[in-house]
Length: 534
Ligand code: BES
Ligand code: ZN
Ligand code: ZN
Image (cartoon, rainbow, N blue to C red; front, side, top):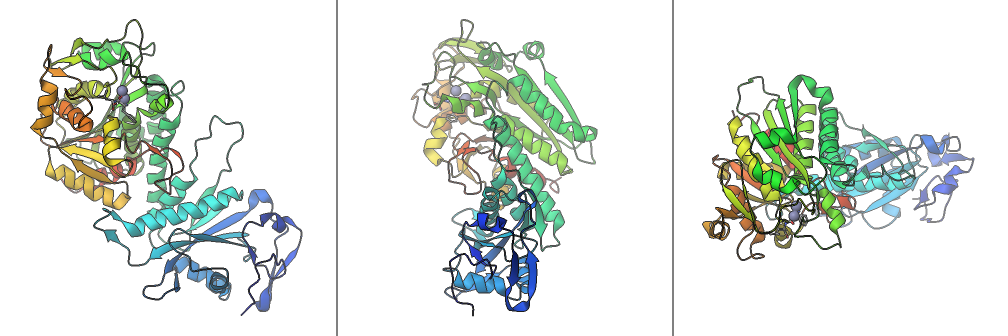
């Protein structure tokens, strides 16, 4: 065996850790005893290709490695050099840990190898997700990001036996919102390596692109993504699918005509006109099939209104349209996948701002269904815009209604960023959402819809409902859900409170710091799951 040499050895061709600059030297690399030789010198920085490979931990064998099919194939072309290097370069690669090898292959100056954990991981009952899929996403994301930092322009990615998850990890890991920076990030293109499952790969690319669209909309500043700009962006994204999609960008006049007094009470403090975005995706061969209705909270900036929020972190409220972003992005994704289902998307879009015209605490307004609402806190605006959108949505006789909203800080207190809180009147709908989230790893957790909470919003001095619970902070996510329920008569309705999963610090390892675009993939997987359900 070659002696362990952690110094740079340009003659052996095995160069460890971050010594990339050395590779730029003009030289010829002799590939050891097998006599292959190649020139690494000519590879321009702008053309360098990278490769990300996965490696499992061998079951029941401490320190044992099990190469994926692609890694084993690559190892074979190097006559076992990769496995030899993995052995001598350090401890066994544990799940998520990585190592880079430079100059070992003429086509790939940089090869990242990442640990995938145990082959037997699979679905974990206590974690409520498929650990194998999560491991693949995490590993491929980590490998791609390492190579992105090395300014590699094109990366081939190991399918790891689950090309969809590999593509999701790569696509999500590489995304960064740098549109407004002068110095852009290194853009990396990706391609499946050593697997025939190009359909799975393509599906994963589309899922990741969907979530990245939601991330882009959420991260973008509120002076860029106004209600009008939001609607125009979605219209553009849906343009290639015009055959199956109809879009209505409803104006303020239309909203008034619809008597959406709750929605209008939120937008009235702002100079930006509100937009009620309505998307129809007709994917089912049966045009009469009852649609799935998705409703997203679309507050493009939530200052709190007259009940003004404190300044620290108020900037994060540019993402208060996360519900609308994930709903619309999931419809764009469903259209790209040509899912054979009908989906209607509704997004009440507006800003929540203080001004001389703004709604004041104690004001009473009338919702579309005639219910009166005392607005005790103008910062509880999400439920107001959703109330009218939910009433309107019933007119389509949907098979199920799912609304998605960055609704309450209280759900963040309850669940943090681990899972979206789901409040639903339907065990069937809960099962569908939960099943989808196990696959995507973007989890959901069921929350209560007790009458206990309903009483706290219906006990109101001036009107039928108060927009905040009478014990204010206690059970805030649950009283908000109870409020929404007052605008629902459908038997299959779910409210997804996504305030806790709105942004990512480092909790989800395959998402960078920033707005998360969660739970777009779960919504898409859920819609796809309805295909054979009549
Ligand atoms: N958009 C916020 C909720 C939010 C908080 C989303 C943190 C993301 C991160 C919502 O409009 C709001 O302000 N809710 C209030 C409700 C309260 C006044 C009853 C809240 O959660 O404090
Ligand atoms: Zn608010
Ligand atoms: Zn809000």
